[in-house]
Image (cartoon, rainbow, N blue to C red; front, side):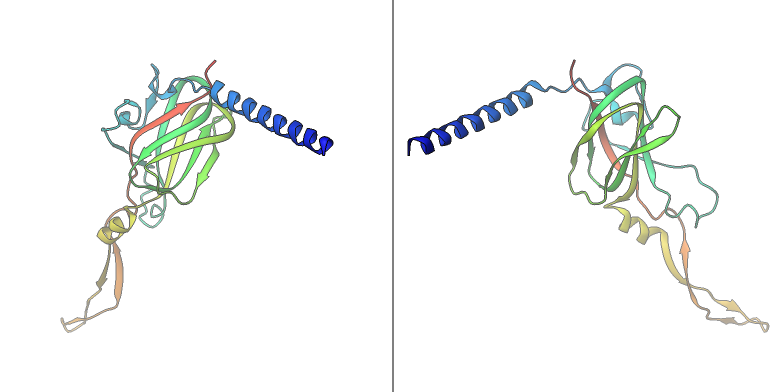
Length: 200
């Protein structure tokens, strides 16, 4: 009984020690200041980095190819450029309609590389903790779907009948065709994008 008691006590003390150690690590780990608010930072919409949650900006559509069908599924994007390289561990996005998106970082070769992907989102404040730090001068949010897409699609994609004029001047009812009058996806509404590393 004495041996069993001692083993249990040692195990308990060991677990308490590990808990204290982990707790100390969490408490000791502090985030840096928000890099997106530093001087020299630019964004595709300045409201993303103005530090005011009440101001709302929008993602922007990529340059049109001139073909409505080609541009139908092109995602919109929100971009932040940093004046110098920063090691990013945490990204916080404030958005009321962001649902399906990807986060990319600008690499040393001048290419955008995917660092995070989320297919379904219902949060208005999206707090992303990366598995490993990313050293970059730019972060891009690629918007694939928003909660407003269905309404946008109903507004800009109409089913209409194509009437045909016959040789004798009469009009004959033709088949139904979809008419595209504008984008079928909505822009993301974003009030802030925050970027953090670990404090020195």
